[in-house]
Amino acid sequence: MAKESAIRIRWLANESDEPEVHQVARISQEVAGPDGWTAEDIVRFFKKKNGTPKVITIDKKIVGCMFYTQCDGYSLLELLVVDRENQGKGLEAKLLANLKRLLTPRRTEIIANIPERDVKTQVLLRDNGFKWIRTTRSNGPDAIYTLRYTRTKEDKHFLHKCGR
Image (cartoon, rainbow, N blue to C red; front, side, top):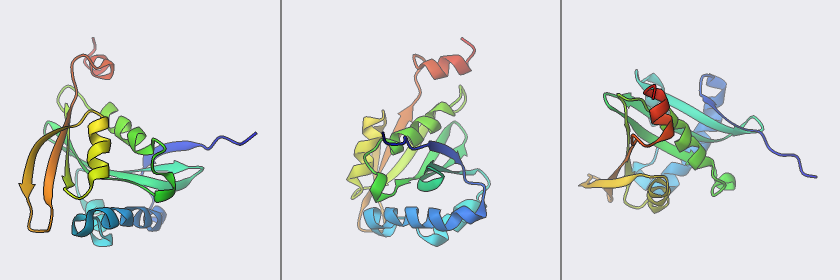
């Protein structure tokens, strides 16, 4: 019988994790081209005041990451990526579910700006309740699609946090 892998989502609090995160985040450049994340972007994000980096691990190996920023009234999803070997296994959805659970009565939305060519992420977000709200032309070759997830009052996690 095959051993079941231990999947865990945790804060990225250890500098020794950075090389693995850089390796996983490099996939975003392959998909999003010039709008993808560079090593410098990751270092800049770590220094950000309201930035929160999380990783998803399988048997203690980092296989994906999610970076988001807490803003007034919403969370800004800045990076969501899983390594090629583990894509399509629902890990991205687990990361999104983790972020959705952090929404509060005062912070009820998640916003994501996705490059036009990153169709895979657009579909993933749409399948997880995000809706398109606008398209913005960028200085690069792609337009940027802004998608939004809005917590509804019917959502059981939202009702629980409201004390209902």
